[in-house]
Length: 248
Image 1: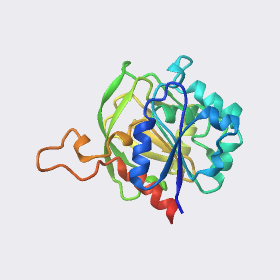
Image 2: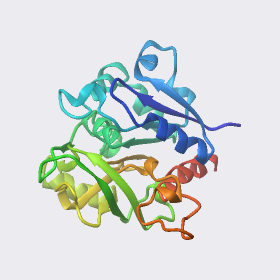
Image 3: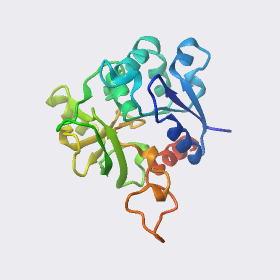
């Protein structure tokens, strides 16, 4: 039986095609769906096992990165997402999708509370749009997305990627629950403790600023050289891990 994945987009999303391709390469039956289709009921989140909120600039980031998209999840799909997570499914937000998840309160999701914003992503420090490759280090985490991954070379493309927390206690709780999934080897945006990605307490909800879907082929990597190109890009492993987790 096919394992279905949904890539949920809104006005301003621009990485849905790459996310769709990553899912298909990993083995999923992938569907590109506009958020209004879920709101209207013409498409149902319950039909899927993997939910991806891709990158871009939803609603132009005019009210802050990911805020308008997040409000649609809060006010129109407020019960659907927690119920989706409770059924042992997977959810991932990439870049703008990460911003959406934290501003909707889906992450960090302490004690199964997916409706309270305790962290955020704000303007880079130093300010300015960052578009380059970074190296990530996987942390001590229970997330199935990073099985067998110790480090990851992936690109970033954001102006509001600095991860911050509401207070010191939130940061301490993220560490205690093993919810910090990725750290930058060297932060490009001033993120607290170099954090690049976090999960909920189950590990099944992942948010990260870098773009694994933009490193699917060996030739994508900036350090590829003639005769030394890997068969696959490093980012594809995250999607393969998701598929294997749901298959098993």
